[in-house]
Image (cartoon, rainbow, N blue to C red; front, top):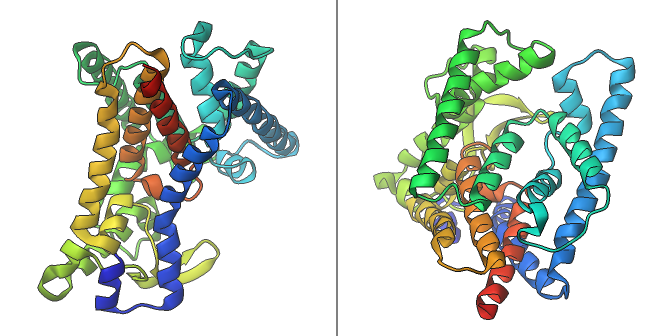
Length: 351
């Protein structure tokens, strides 16, 4: 991406912004690895995650219920006021479920059932599609159900059948765009696949455009990669500092812009900056991380670390379609990935 930038030209500010944007996951993984190596009690960080998540959950619920006292129930406003997701709470819930009876770690949590209840309620009020999918990915992965085995394939098939059945049902239900409450949330769920993959979009129809925005901006990026000399942009990308031309001035995040530095689809974003070569490196990293779960060992801590790393890889494979994957700026799982890599390192040495 650095080399490609000089072939197409760039503004210094845009180049530097992209450089640190792509450097972020490396810094976070390295920070997680280093900081975890300095903590004597490895159980402490998981205990701390649960208590910190409890604090954020209480703040979230107070914020949401303060709104609901005086205002009608509206999911979009609840998410606007209380937040759209919380990786810390997702992680804490996962740890509480998979570590039953100290299966992997020996740490004591006071008022465990109460904490679990508060986290579940807070989790619900985020109304987050990504949190829900990520929760199942992490729980299934840590328990070893996402490996290609007879048992794993059975769980994957059950999940896929349940998932497809749910989408068939919500596609049969009449739902209105922008409806308040659960109906509006179900409408967003129904539109999720077309939002990612739709390429034929009527730009003059703003309702259709916003419902399928991720597909639109990804299509524009791919078109501009092909529209390079000898299609070289497809192989090498257009480099740091390159901007995607939306071909119209769009109202985005309280500003109007025609040229944007990044898009939601992480795969296309990586390809736009560094071409197929960069995308190949990214996919290699994710599939290698997933393959770690196949490491044979009887060490329970090592099994936990390997399976969780694999789960995070699957999470990034999925979220790269929607929220930039490992490059999502609000994501904490790159930091957690670093802690798990160190946990894996010391567990291997102890085995």
